Image (cartoon, rainbow, N blue to C red; front, side):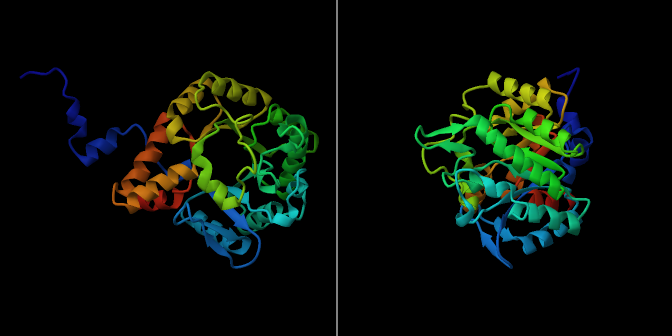
Length: 327
């Protein structure tokens, strides 16, 4: 049989496949999420995220040093606020001596070149577990009042020395408010990585276990996006870019590869994607059962996210992935 083209020629060996591979993972692609707790020498495994830990700040600093030595250059910080500082205003979130602010300072002192990002949302500080201030009588989230609180939070992170704030709250108009406040207060080098298309997803459960931040009533569907919608994600993202976002994010990642591609096609700023806790837990659970090869599933999943258009990937598998990529 005569064929004008045989597509299998470039697949015939590992060397040939590597030569023509369109998507290559490197350590530079990854953002490492880190969970931080009060205390000293505390290391708590998250039950629903096997192999992942919430650490006290001293251990976190050691972890950051290890990450840097592995070639991982970006981290995203989340803190577990103590119950006695939680309220319905979120005021602990802009405490200059708060856990997040101390974490940024200590990490930047220990590893100055590490690119540090911080979560901006009120749920770790809220007695109600919501990302914003609650109108208790109506049981609704107050958008504008929340943006004011988050602006104070963002400024406190900038003052502590963060490289990028990462607003995950999904309040309307917050990126413009943050950019204006940063500019007016002289924090012109502080970037914004906006969770622009953050969906109301069932895949966040293990994360909420990690920070004890599950909503105390209702759900987050009035401010996070409907997972049935695509065009809405583009509109949200374009608004964030117009308001001053330096990087935009799609969250979750694996169930939203189509959205990552749509966003990538629509914007000229870098696109990030969050490979979330539930996606991590699924791979871990299936591997534990012997139903799939964990290492292969990790690399294939991360490659699919990058192939879809993500320039950056926040993932709990970053260390494992780098170990495989450099071995």
